[in-house]
Image (tube, rainbow, N blue to C red):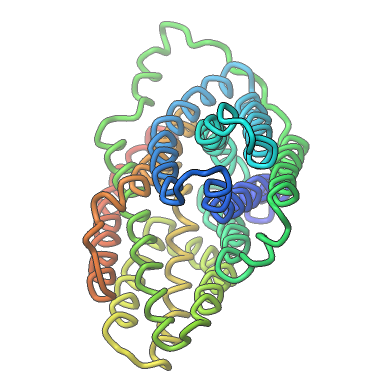
Amino acid sequence: MTRDRVLWWRVGGITAVQGAITLTWVIYALYLPQLLTQLGFAKELSLVLLTIEHALEAIIEPISGGLSDRFQRFMGTRFPFIAGGVILASAFFIGIPAIAIFGKSSTLVKSIFPFVAIAWASAMAVFRSPAVVLLGKTAPPLELPLAASCLTLIQQLVGALRFTAYGFILGLGPAFAFTIGSVALLGGAAFLRFVTPPDLPQPEESPANAEISAEEKITLPTVFLIVGTGVGIAWGLRFLFATLGPVYGSFLAENAGWGMTGFSLGMAIAALPAGKLAVKLGNSRGMLVGIGGAIAMLEVVTFIPSGFVVAIASVLLAFCFSLILNGMVPYVLGLVSSRRSGLGVGFFFGGFSAAMSFFDGIFVAVKGIPATGIRGAIALAFAGTLIALSLRISKVVEGKIS
């Protein structure tokens, strides 16, 4: 597969699924507190549900990714996991507003609302890793950051809606908004299936090949690198937005949301140029450049209270984080064999979700811009250290595969 043969239609299918995933989470996060209070629950239950959901994702992602590897090997496709997860997620997603609308008068129906919400998030975790890992077959290894930039682009474009378009989304009403999200999931999965035909199934290994299979297993040090990097990037993102919100608020007051929207759009715009730079530098080195620049710019916006300086630093920060986000999936694929790619990506997203789940419990006492800015830098430095350590392992894996 050469430079001019990146399978952009397949990239588009994965991007469609990623966009639908982001859209449904935006809708869910905006409506969840409202629906809970409408049913008589405390608004604070939304934080508990999100914590539980992320914790379950940390378990489900590696399992579904690993099982999808087996389906890919023996059936030639991962789509049973993708289709099954999408159908379940779409059904549960429609069920969330249905319970809120039609279950007000029934205590029994209202009581199942939290369980349906958790079931929806669990179903979402079933198909994310099997879908995203398909990126590995859309481009040569060196070109993967460019292909992955499309995922960053759509994720940031759709994710920006939560900062300024929340009024419009809430104005749609839960029934219409959740229906849009459900249709987007089904449509994205259908398009992905259309542009990704199954491969020829691989026969079961003979005993003579058992040693080769053992070499392809993911070792504990590799799991630590993958999970730890996911944790570091997740906490870096949480501290990033915890820092930028108050910083923009000090300059823009009630219009701080537009500053956050502008930053997300900046990451979206920077995604493709950052992908091209990562192709030239190499993915892991590109991520390290992004992490180094992000640490520096995060401290600039934290300790230099100048509107002009913050604006320039935000542009550079957006570009640096695009380098990081673009590189996540290619980074994992460079550490594991192709037969364990789903499990590897599942471990990464599992670590990412676990970090999100336990963030508030671990860092509940973090207060103020300097504290969040410094801890964000530490989290990114931790991820960068693991990526630097992984460079040697990546070369060893590539040598075995070749």
